[in-house]
Length: 192
Image 1 (cartoon, helix red, strand yellow):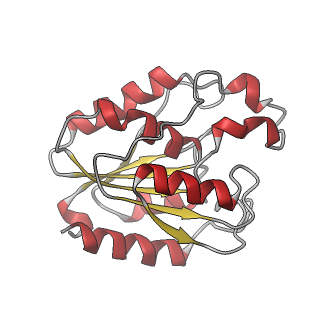
Image 2: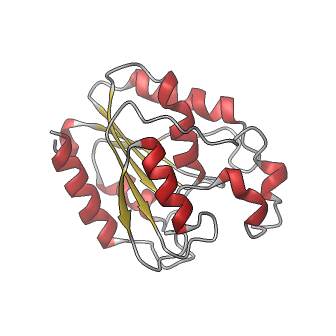
């Protein structure tokens, strides 16, 4: 499948994805990409975030490919069973936020993740109803690599070890993220 044949839904994580983030760059560069906007990026509600993803999938005219990062990946997995059957062609999950172990995360921008993420844990353990690729870093402060391996097995996602890439965001030096672009292209090619 080519990007032009899909509605690519960008699903950012907590606080959204700033302009230099690879998700924002992809959104600007892929003609069929659009962002799933959330009402509150800093005090998320799982049900509200799921409803926004569901509405975006329902509004899509082409097969949907979800491109999710961090808490967006966790939300996508929570949403999977509520999405219209057959509309999602695949999910590209990057640096999933391990909400089950949020007590081990660093405090970010003064927010306590345990208080900010009520309702996101536990993560589902069922296989996803669509193909998925999970890209994980070996030194992500929000998800240990061993845990990413476990999550990919639960979800039936193909695991890609990205190496020591931190949280695969702007802070870790992944604005453009050319390796991700290549991985995403291979993922898309495998969908069709």
